[in-house]
Amino acid sequence: MLIGSVIITSLQGIVKKDGFRGMYRGLSPTIIALLPNWAVYFSVYGKLKDVLQSSDGKLSVGANMVAAAGAGAATSIATNPLWVVKTRLMTQGIRTDVVPYKSIISAFSRICHEEGLRGLYSGILPSLAGISHVAIQFPAYEKIKQYMANIDNTSVDNLSPGSVAIASSIAKVLASVLTYPHEVIRAKLQEQGQMRNAETKYSGVVDCVKKVFRSEGIPGMYRGCATNLLRTTPSAVITFTTYEMMLRFFRQVVPPETNKSYNHNREEETKSLVSRQGAEEEESLRESQTQSNKINTSPIPLGSK
Image (cartoon, rainbow, N blue to C red; front, top):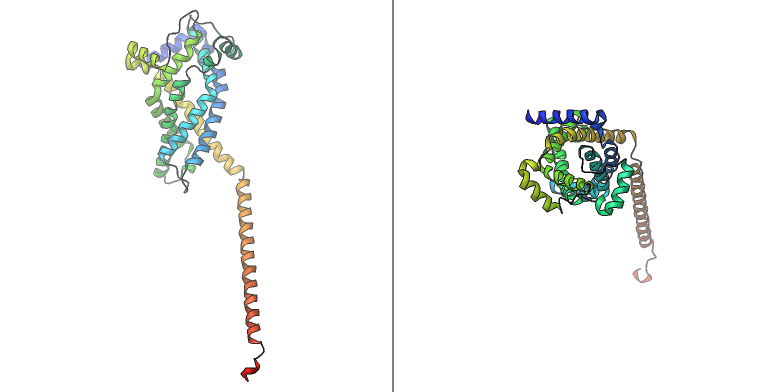
């Protein structure tokens, strides 16, 4: 009840101060960041799974975690500047000690000019630490899907959208609760570069962790976790369910021409090999018969009469 009342009070305060538009502060950079974020992640994750799977096509939990972590690291490095801009735009309206940005382009321009590349990659270390999130989320998602498929006596590829949604939501909540402190540290480091005429509060990741833990304790490391779950869990459900359904759709609609061509070539090679082997066997048989005929029809030596 307490958490719910805090969330409601916060929503009321935002609407009262900034109107309905305040509820969507930072939406544009979030949308812009999400597309490359998931494009990079799913591409790298799929490739790494193909590389790490065993000869029988199976992927161990450890290999799955490595694939998920590798994809997470690549995604963090590629998209961190977008998340810095998103964080700055979302927090500037609720603070009086910052110089507001006028737009996404303005934010990028000012950060590059005032803080350089380091500003665009502020919070990158806790973001990389956040690969533990996907290293838990994706293997858990795969295992939960397999468990639900076994219960329904079906295959993973034939799970209903509802089952996929349940699997993705459980995996997301589990990963978020276990790794949320890194999100708090990342956000604090990314937003502090915006302060007007103020000294940097945190010198780095370790310093930030110490100060937050000293002043707020463990609850401080989980500040905003409930609100975060309310926001990210539906997002994960929509993303994963849409991805799975679209993947099935394209597998049905778009024929795997590459595989067909490969199989056709393999069949032709096999036929050609069989034909060559048959021809060689026939030639060998003819030679044997010829040699046999020569022996049978050879002239009898005169001395044998």
